[in-house]
Image (cartoon, rainbow over all chains, first blue to last red; front, side, top):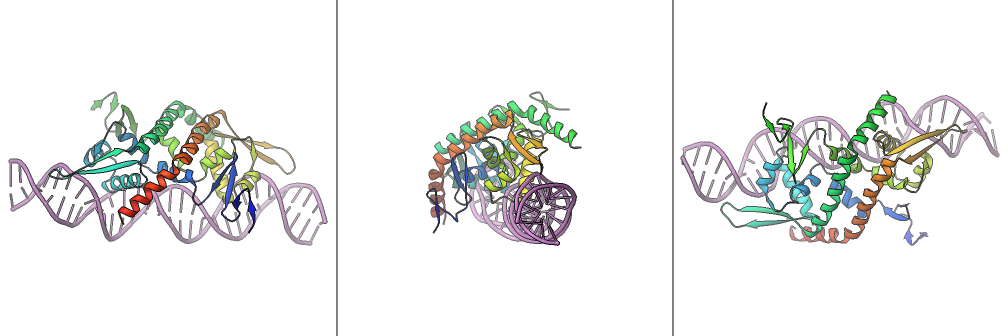
Length: 135
Length: 135
DNA sequence: TGCGGTGGTTACGTGAAGGGAACCGGCCCA
DNA sequence: TGGGCCGGTTCCCTTCACGTAACCACCGCA
């Protein structure tokens, strides 16, 4: 079996900036795929200020469907970003909150938000330029 | 026309953490949609060390199809992350490089990579936990 | 009696993202 | 003469993320 830099050739490894990225089992993919989802980042931001109940999230983000809300919450819960707690009230209420992992990730999301706001105009300008030139 | 916090109601504004997010014309969306793409972040990383030619990128990232390589480069160029320069050699060669905007964005991507590597195990563990419990 | 609020699940449909393969002109080299 | 490298473009097909809508049990309230 051929070897290269300690990695078995055949796992499809891409080396960039001295870092190896394998297509399968890529740590970055696990994260990107999450923040790439349409509602995931927004959900993390929504929970930034503290725990929220299912229906409160629904009211906060009216555009999301019940189906996508459930699915987004499940996805984030599965990967450990948020926790789910059921209270035996009548009717039973469910609270979602950021885990420490989620709060750590929140820092990145905030950075993304800040950067976006700071450079949004530049991006829009570049886009307009491109479209005008390549017309 | 009803007003609220200086924004016309009817544009569908979501307020989270004191920040308003409109579904249309959302700065964060412009960024998320880019990094969410399958190849965009990897391409930014690939250009981090300096300019690269089309075929060099192809060789560096063997998994990408020629079609997706072109499309990814165009998308990033359109939004101003990378620049494209054609040299009148024989045959003509094309070089891609990060713009200042792209380099600024690279910082975020690197942060994402570092975070992912640091917390990958935690995510995998959470996932395994979830799958075991919810079996 | 039936309506609304809890927190969901399920079935179904669609558009967009992505993959595969073929093709392009121009040039060099054998 | 015909491959191969260069930097693409075009067509077709599949997959999947997402949206819509209906349905569920349970309870309180009017």
